[in-house]
Length: 292
Image (tube, rainbow, N blue to C red; front, side, top):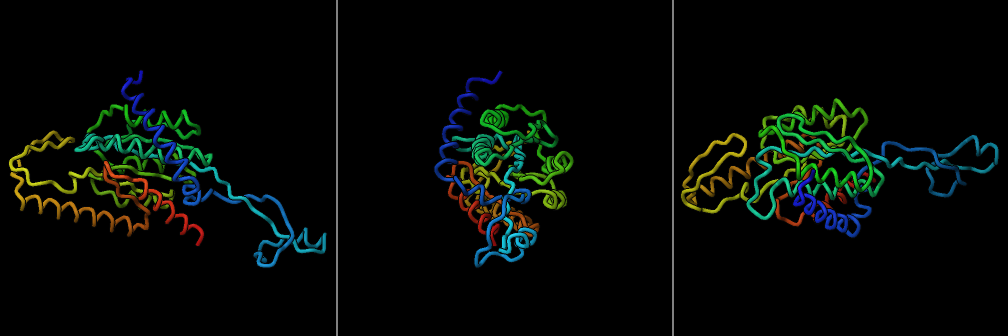
């Protein structure tokens, strides 16, 4: 039985995200992701400017007029959402936790997919696979995906993105769109990312809380590691705050350099920010590359 509070959250997310998809992202998703192939549709008379490689010589010979073959892209794709459920993803210094933010983002991606008749699946992970929802179509299925992200109670506390990447490589033989949503506070994972990217259209989505990038000088403060339970006391002076900010920036730079080295499109999002312009631009940039 899903708690009433979660049901209310899911309905709120549905109203907001379906409106975003309808009003702002219509067409952007479709242009950003290719279908799995091309299927023959019909022939028509050759027109100046047509690609001569598409001429149907059999029809041309029968009619004594040049005809070309027309093809239709097979649009149906599978989107897999790999969503972190570790303890660090429950952190939030604003109104939303990283998990709440991930659920809303997943809804936007999933509703974009089903509007284009694509299937959506979910993998919830910590340092093990916690939940697998096989890909399906339809509104009810998307709402189930969002509910699972919000309501799932994981057994593990730590995070390891290598686990879902290896899992997807085993279960999905056909090339899929794979959104890996995590804060990436995880062990070394470049090798597994490289292998997964050869088989799938892999898109890392880094979700961070603003406090993970910068903390204000607050004096003596106790911090608890949500994954290990370790507690430390810091005297957060202005110098310590500057050092923290520089270290966080260095980590982001190294991570981004790795994604670029692997030739991956990626997103970096902050909890509480208006993510729609960034997501829209991401789809547009991919769409431009697809037609080059």
